[in-house]
Amino acid sequence: MYLALKEIRHEKLRYGLIISMIVLIAYLIFILTGLAFGLAGENTQAIDSWDAKSIVLNKDSNINLSQSVITSDQAKNAKLTSKQAVIGSTPVVAKDKKRAKVSATFIGAKRNQFVLKDLKVSSGRKARSSHEVVVDQKFKDEGYRLGDKITLNSSNDSYQIVGFTKNAKINISPIIYGTVSTWQSLRGMMNVKVVGSAIVSKTAKYHAKNSHLKTYSISSFISKLPGYSAQNTTFGFMIGFLMIISLIIIAVFLYILTMQALPIYAVLRAQGIPARTLVATVTSQSLILMVAGLVIGAALTAATASIIPIGVPMSFNIPVLTWISIGLLIMGFIGSAIPAQKIATVDPVKVIGG
Amino acid sequence: MSVIELKNINKYFGSGISKVHVLHDVNFSANRGELILVVGPSGSGKSTFLTIAGGLQTPTSGEVIVEGKPIAQLSTAQRDKLRLNQIGFVLQSYSLVPYLKVKEQFTFVNKVKRQGNLNEAELAGLLKQLGIEQLTNKFPGELSGGQTQRVAIARALFANPDIVLADEPTAALDSARVAEVGKLFKELAETRDKAVVVVTHDTRLMQFADKAYRIMDGKMTETSVTKAAAE
Image (cartoon, rainbow over all chains, first blue to last red; front, side, top):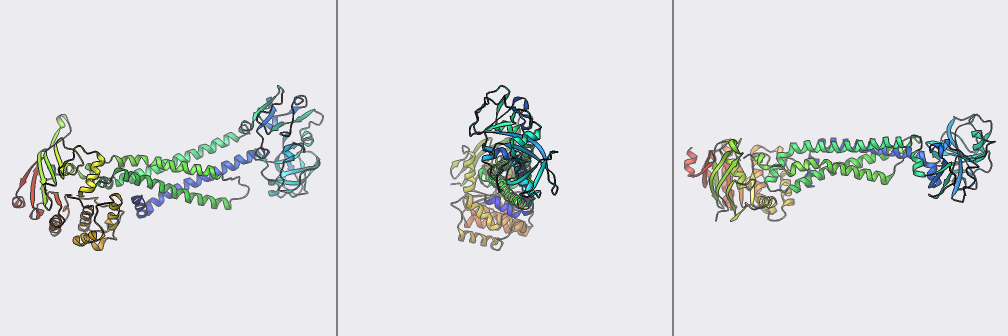
């Protein structure tokens, strides 16, 4: 550690450049992770808020909530307790004469079931009639206010916003919570005997007892949300590649620096300095560089997070970022392995001659 | 008793038709308080002799004995320990860590070898004896060739070894500086009771030596100091 710190202090420019590269990589990884979690969160916020463990869909819906319809006949044997709730889902465009149009997802549910019963409003109140709705905070950000009357799609019916709720998005789309009858109306199914799009359950082993209906775990349902898996895989690859790049940077730079300093290490070995002391020097140097890069990268990320616009979906999951930091430290440790091996096997005789 | 002794040392490099016999039945001994010169031209086997004497490589045959103990059976770690505690190296170049100030070169040794080094007062005395007491806050890159060599000597002596092995310590020094280094080694050997072995092609050092060996084509012979100086 002594030699490691002394060399870094003496070669400020050289090591400063390495640290700055690690800072940029760490910063990029943190921001990408924040975005990945932010976007993933906007896909699943509503589902997470329901605290559901499983979902029953029409088996021909390809695990797509908007494509699923459950008829009354199909649901006649389904026993609903306080842990189940029927929902109807359909994409809508909400508009108000004075405001911008908002693409949203209408979720129709029953007021006595947990989806609406447990709904937490951040301002206003819960809906009391079929012409009242509670909407996601995104509407507030777009300029909508309590009392505004919105129309949905081409319908002439208007619905008054009586409450706003936070974290109510599904598949990045803000939710408008209303009644199942409104959902039926929006889907043009007023004269069809339908129950809804799905039954969400707080228990994992709920079955609707009908061959046309199938129960899926929430995790498999989420993984089938349009674009969700592709998006997460893309971010995962980007973060993975950046970690590998950090490994290569550390390995290449330390290798070059070590090769340049090899005659010094050889003489130190000749003077009886144990190989483990010199290996510890290069390993601790790598860890010092990584820690410095991570700390500065984290500080830059925090500064970015404080000024980033509200619309950017960014969410910092501290445990995950901690694991990523540990991963980067391990990469640095691995990166120092090749130069460490060079030092451990350096032959003083080759420097002295003979 | 000799502090270091080499008995019937042979060293071969390579094999088959490229096999080279580098050292031929070399016998050597050094006592405390002596400055011993090993003089020979480039390629004569001087450096091979030095590295074998310092335990950096093993002879093909023969025995190296330090303080009465053969070192052939020592493990790598034990050889490291031997060099750290009993043998000080002064090399032609790279003897000092370039990013450590002069005083930090000693701090580093203290961190690796926690006992048996010179204490603060002894170090101050050594630096004064070497005339480098004003240089403690300088980096090696800020020192002249002669100053660097003196600091390297101080660095080697700081661990308080019994033997100092020096490889071409006067290379690139003018005659005045050579004389200074010669006197210094002589003085250090006598006052600090060390066996100082200098491997060199520089016969200008001969006038300061207590004993001299001539090495030529791997064959080492003890020679009188005045004879070697005359050559």
